[in-house]
Length: 528
Image 1: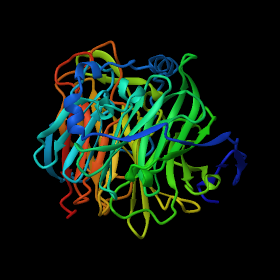
Image 2 (image 1 turned 90 degrees about the horizontal axis):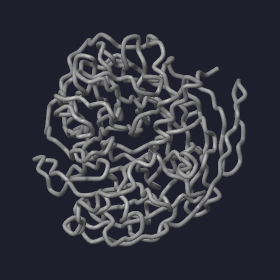
Image 3 (image 1 turned 180 degrees about the vertical axis):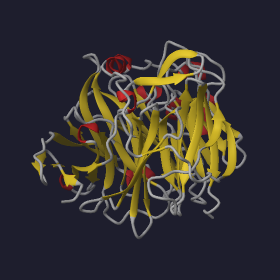
């Protein structure tokens, strides 16, 4: 029997058990279709940014999920470290990459966590952290616009999209359409997802703007993620009941009507809600490169499944003509080598000269779920952080032919070459199959740093080469916070399809919340 087994198919409103070998418990899923509550066409962003009163725009309701976050940490314990069976401690090859630009991005404004995010486009790099964004010339690193309050995107739009500026942000580049896709959460009931699609490839120009509501209820949306696919912009979020101590209410996945949003037309969303509270923090797949998925291919979602020591793979097929034909199916359980969540999902990462331990977010897979179609095979890359005998390391996977029966876990590895802690990873691959993964590094004798490693297709499966440094931090986060990153961003240049761009956070001086961010690019010499 295959190592992969199909656990449950969740189709529209019904839960249908398709079990191979073991009985599985079905999850309840609901489907809903709803139009955007509002859409319009904006002025050029450079004009709206000039109009925005930054001090006022920074104001919002704050981090509403703090109560649920505190509860999550309260139930997590570091526990006894367990050796990872596929940990890589040797570095058989020196990582040789050609460095590009390296410059500071948007700094902190006393927000607990940056949600460091960004993407590279045709001529620009856009970085968005909690509350503010900036646009940079990708050739020189010179700032073109910003930092500007995130809701400057929504000048003149009205409602919570314009009046609130509270994080869980995403900046993506739709490579096939040469457009920017920006999203932030409106943290003021009704909770909205505010999605802006650029009219051209210039991030400082005009945008088609949309506000989408939760079609099931008015739950708070937490840890939102977005992926670009040919037939939609795919979205995931964890749902919390803000009126009842932010109790976890399950997960929701949606498809936004990309084709109409690229034209500025009225657009709808199709959503599924899974009430199974054992499932959380889905990632939607996001296309790298200019080769599209096979025609009619579903978008793929992945979540971490520690109960089964596995990854869960889901398929979202959307039909914009007959919504009743849309399906969200899965999970296909993909067993992986045994792992223990980093810090058992909580706080345990040490720093030099600070008693404050840092959050690992080890209870979930890390953004993005990178998809690439090589023609002869399709590839998904995803990462998370795991406990090792002495520290925390980066666990990474490559899944091939995800629509197969079964899909293939092609390779996996855990990277932790020394006793320092590595976490908050993000992974991608270039057009020839070179893989790069960036992450944070910290330990008892060092401040948090930003580094990366990588591999060539010819390297032994499951192995990475040595690591390179982007920036060695010179300060620690002081007590009173404990949050870190929430996510970082590894993306690939859409023009040469070779150059990696990575963004993460660090501290230049020891302080509370006055974090900084760094943006850096590099490429493998074998990619031309």
